[in-house]
Amino acid sequence: MPKPRVFISSTCYDLAPIRDDLDQFIENMGYEPVRSEEGEVFYREGQNVQDSCLAAVASCHIFVLLIGGRWGSEYSGTGKSVTKAEYDRAIDEGLLTYVLVDQDVHHDYRIYKKNKSEAKDANAITYDKTEDTRIFGFIEDIVTRQVSNAIATFSNYEDIEKYLRQQWASLLHHYLTSDPMGIARLEVDCYREMFEYSAPRYLSAWKLHPTPRMLLEHEALRDILGEGLIAGPEDTVLVCTGKGSSPYQYTQDQFADYEEAYTNVRTWFIAHLEQHGLTVDEFLADA
Image (tube, rainbow, N blue to C red; front, side, top):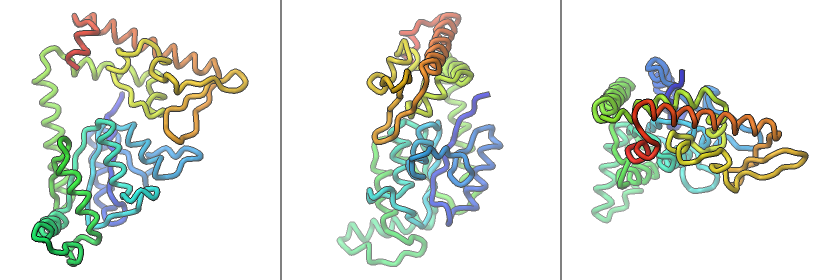
């Protein structure tokens, strides 16, 4: 059966034990944890580790960010950390995002803000838990966003598990009680059917993040790919959807199979909506 994919983002070495426990908790919840050190990220040939992690974020449904006292590695000369790049990708992809900050780091952040507001050199202060003041800029970027700006603090792993249990229970309750037309249930049905077919899975691999809405708004697989679908050499087709990434190459027969699978799942979903008394337009208006 399909499972929600949950990406765990944090610096690795200082938070390694917590990442291990969180991985097990997510698996026990029946979800699929995704983190780099456990081989759960697909490392594509010709792509560096950092870009592979960002691609894995795009294939997930939920993003859990843990912020400790270390800033971590810089992402490809951008001036931001890898975890910041992963968070930005999660926001861009519209993932459900949960941010938890070590409570001692959050205390340091409050001291940093107070000194900064008083025109003092907040960067010159030695903080108890925070090794790099760039972490405060990361936290500031999160809390000043208009959406997905909630943070929680933790002192140990148990705080993280309790918070996520409460959040995910509330999320399920919301879907069960605020969906009189059954849209959420129909979306779940569609996701389940989608991942029985190869084409939607390849849409994830192509960084296109397939959704029921995407299927209904695009009659054919070619409509989604648009200019990203290119005629290749020797009767092949190339799929290129990522900036700077190498294209995927398929035979005509392989791609025809993906097109057929896409059409099949789209046809199934439209019929499923009709069985529940909904038209495509009604679903799109409420989804």
